[in-house]
Amino acid sequence: MGWCLGPRRESVPGDRDAWNGGTVMESNLNRRMFIGAAGAAVAAGVATKVLGEDAPPAGAAKTIRIVGVSCSPRKGKTTAAGLQICLDAAKQVSPNVEIELVELAGLNINGNVAAGVPLPAGQEDDFLKIMPKLSDQKVAGIIVGSPVYFGSLSSLCKAFLDRLMAFRKDNFALSNKVAGALAVGGARNGGQELTVQMIHAALLCQEVIVVGDGKPSARIGATLWNKDDDISGDEFGVMTAKNLGRRVAEVALRVAK
Image (cartoon, rainbow, N blue to C red; front, side, top):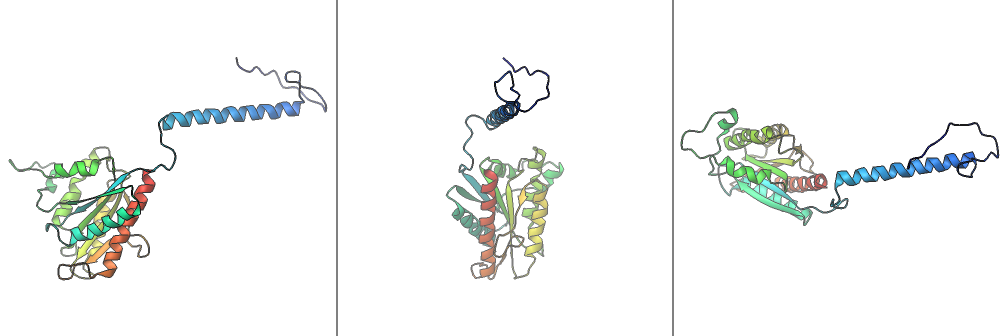
């Protein structure tokens, strides 16, 4: 049964409201309280429908995965080592963080496919093996690493980034995943920052959330110096790798909530 309110009438001090036995002021207050309570109930009902009856409580922990993609043609070398530093740091952020290192060395990833050029007859497309590792709903963060060749990223890294076109065409399937970049060069200033920026530029086209290495270095990403095929002696570079892994995990956990 709905409420039926009659026409408003002028009130005088002490006048009694006939329908609820209180003063007009009390009546108006009661009606405001009733409407406010009803609005709150409606809002609560809408929230329940939006979240679903089985929705987890706010701030509930969710397990996520951070994937590092090494785009070096040399398997198990310094780019992979740098990414492993990132991933280990990400893992330390929370027990709800899983990590995985994917190396593209030895895989056939042809960037021409992104332009609609078919593979030669009989040639296997190994990018199809990589796609499920990135599209998994548990994957919340991706760190792309490349060696620096002549101040730029590797041809394998460029092919990989081009092939991410498949995710863009699939309604931006990588949207809102957190991404970072790592570069390893043969000199302290051998083009690492430029390579990181190139990776960022390609990732931004996927609607991902790009982050740099976090504090205290807090620059554009992880930049490591490969001296005699070893990055362990590059104290500053190792710090940026740790900070990048931590930052990707922190932001990914926030987004996952």
